[in-house]
Length: 565
Image 1: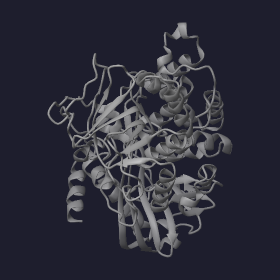
Image 2 (image 1 turned 180 degrees about the vertical axis):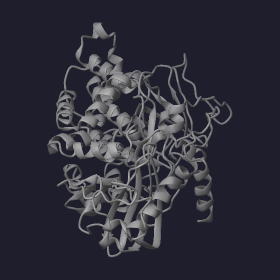
Image 3 (image 1 turned 60 degrees about the vertical axis):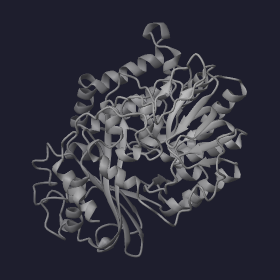
């Protein structure tokens, strides 16, 4: 705990500072030392050589250049705490090795999934269920992140049995006296139940497992297989490889060059025994967002007594906050006196430091009269959002967060990854049975995940994310008050990435109609003056204008339908 305290102090001194560019990293560098996903080591996918070859990654390092986007994906100046989060222990979760048969390097596998998190294991199960000989390669680490999900989406996936708690309603506060009940159920996923479920379905599907880090990928000379080398020198052969290792997977991938840069959602949270929660928030509702400015300028135990327009710091307490990055509290009452409390910055460039979020949470709780008696767990949540999408013409596929399946404006990803897994598995199975080579199979996966229709949808989401990153607290409250006054199918569809590009235009028009003059002005100014506006316009041109007019290729994911994600 003393180490964590020292780390937080170091992070506080770095608030608002962007770390310097990372140096080159050799092929054999263990990613556990860089504060990100523990599943990978830096690797480079080689172009098909003239003859099959196996590269000894321990003795033949290949230098890989970090760009700024990859640095941000992996935690930037918060990398040390991101690493601490990923290395947390949970002895109550069964190890993967105890449930799945150990992989045999002498076998030739149909599919290898690099990364043993929820997305990777779920995809591996879908592949094995379809008859592919499948191996998962990744470190044997417990699930450590907190996952919140909308009940209707999670139930549709048949995963309600993995929930720990659920609430019939979620409530937001966008200013003093401005409570908004969403009329939608919310749930907290039990990490232990989800782990148990993933192990069971993978075991039933005969998925094999190797607890190792992958240090090299190399396409065979005939382009029909991929060789994998682990950090300890073990070599595997698989027809197809899919990287599902979170943000670290970006080191394997190539990205479009015309998108805005990667941003970050950061949150500092605690699961704790508390007193006074019942006097601050409803016990039977999930607190989704409370943007009220209770983290400064408010006496202890007085926030609940503030009347609308009578904040001690003028009005809603927003005087002098033009340069302040907004954050909100997110909370779940878990039963008895146990509560999960988290201060969250939805999106920022650069990331709002954990030290700032922790300080705001402590002050906010004091102002609300919530006394922390015992902390069971701390969480440092870092989610890279937005940025460029992977290109569709590379010889390695990806899935989950590694494939950018994170909503740019919300940070939600787990439900979408589970929803997309069967379709990706179908494409990979078809590639194997159709005799496609590595590059053709990867192209089929990218086309499934990111056809031009979905790229256009994401450009819309990125536009929204970039707008949020520019708003001060009053405008943020006004924006979300407008957002949640839209018809439920629109705001729910937007948050779930389930509105196609045409419906997103209708979403935008309805938002503009009901928005205040101030929000209308910000939307128009952002569209015409921010690079995200041009990125959005270009995406719609690629989607709806003939190919010869835009000069785009099928490799970038052009399609002819409007299927939603």
